[in-house]
Image 1 (cartoon, rainbow, N blue to C red):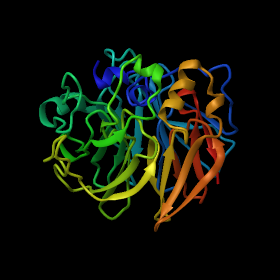
Image 2 (cartoon, helix red, strand yellow; image 1 turned 90 degrees about the horizontal axis):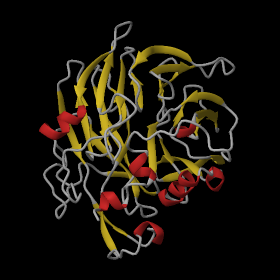
Image 3 (cartoon, rainbow, N blue to C red; image 1 turned 90 degrees about the vertical axis):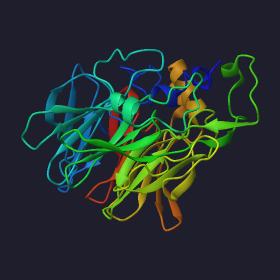
Length: 372
């Protein structure tokens, strides 16, 4: 059995694809906050609005919410986009980018649009500018592919960040790379992220089904988030794939102007595209650079990917209650923000008002919660 098939039910194989669970499990807790739909990631405008893509309806909608008026409902900025699992980002020029996640591991996505990038100019009409899946297959094959059989052209755009010049960075969780695309659809590979050897001791026996694994196997990088520091650098979070060992998730810094950084390697000769900015995390789902110069790192659960998968399979999120984490990282110090408040969070940002906001239960109808 291939490594991918072995991990086909894990949340990082599903959540990193387009599998969405449309309703809350009966035992899921409902944190206090603002209901915002099915939301994977958050962005913040220069005026302090929180911007996100809501994938929970028959059409994706890009919305904003103003922390200065917390009782107001989110406002729709862009409506009528195709259905699918989407993320959105904007810049100071009010350009909006939307990326759609790829197909589920076992076949084409049933949720509509997939593996594509859309550009929406201020007060303009949305237009699809890049077929990300085709770009990966034809222009950016993964040099670190370890699938059996090989699948170096797979794609699952998971997060997007809008640059000041109107272009965008796309973190592709299946392609294990960072792509840059301009509003005309011209695209190139910024960086590739290598595999790393990880222990298999955390893989549940029921997942193996009687199979045995060596003590260590290569794990794919699985980029899940991208953020900017305002100084020409991008920070990319790596969830780190099967066997989903604890403490192996990290954040890597790369230049936004790089081309093919780290792409000269292969599974036996990994090349890192930039320095590791933070490490020792578990299952990072997003990363955000705050105005304070700190990274805000969101982990799905301190108990790991397999714990999250078990809760999702059973439909009982009670085991995940309070286990999500957001950590502020700056100058070697780490502070957990809102400890014990998060259950299966998707993203967290430091808003202009100085408070940290996070999305609880992001695949089950996110609740935007102030945690500091």
